[in-house]
Image (cartoon, rainbow, N blue to C red; front, side, top):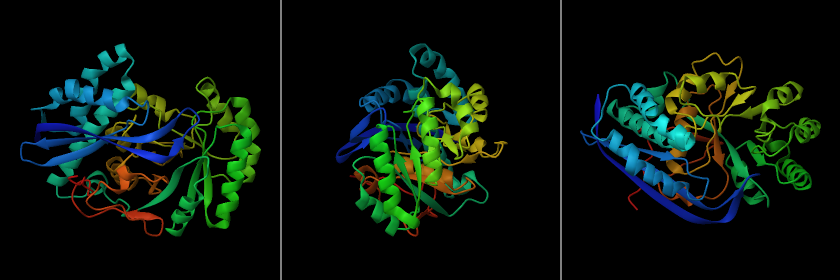
Length: 363
């Protein structure tokens, strides 16, 4: 059993030269929100809460932690992390439903849970992946994402030279631009790598149907979140007609039994939970034990260093051992760890250090 003594939240931001664009918005600067929990024995756990959108999400999240979440957890004895977090969600979900803020609540509680798991793994003297799984992968294959117009072909080349063999292109910017970018990327990587695409809920059902033959002809590995929110009710129909796998899940809430039932029923070939965003880590772990009817699980992540580290540990328990890696330059991923990530043969090795294994630098 552990007892929570201190809780701290820290915000960091950096400007970026190459905006990260999606069909619905773009990031012109990077924000990261980290929390630290210290137990009464002085063991410290860290985690990241997703704050990519909207631009003020980080400020609201700080208020949520300092005014609600931290006071609730300080002094709390934790015997079972899953039980503690289930009760926390139950206690906070009423007001969050009333305010329409269930998503931000899950983003905050997911960080709290990840920090607790970091502490528990350190206390058990195990890497987080070995606390979670009996036989985790020790090296995680990466697929590079966040690729948008203008295409950063220099970064594509650098990642291919590092051994990355799968690149995910963002679509949803208009058919002409999308076709140009897709053809250009496919020609550029040639036989050296595969390509997947992410529409970020940017297409109508009819538009998606028009694209299917072209995507199949280009050997696209999966089509991610193709349909707009207005047309998502037709996702099952699209999946039945699609010759390529349909993926999604980063925007599926997963924090209670109702969410669980909805997730298992999703008409998807590939589930992409994000344990810093809308999927509580305990639910993501249980997902790997469930009967998924042949669905693959490939974790989603696009954020900063600590969330990336946690996602790598989770990917270590997924059958494919495959995890998302934002191709764009990001100082909040490269410059803030005491031991940087190292890509070798397209993989990142899970360290044997206890807990998360990667720690924030003091600066």
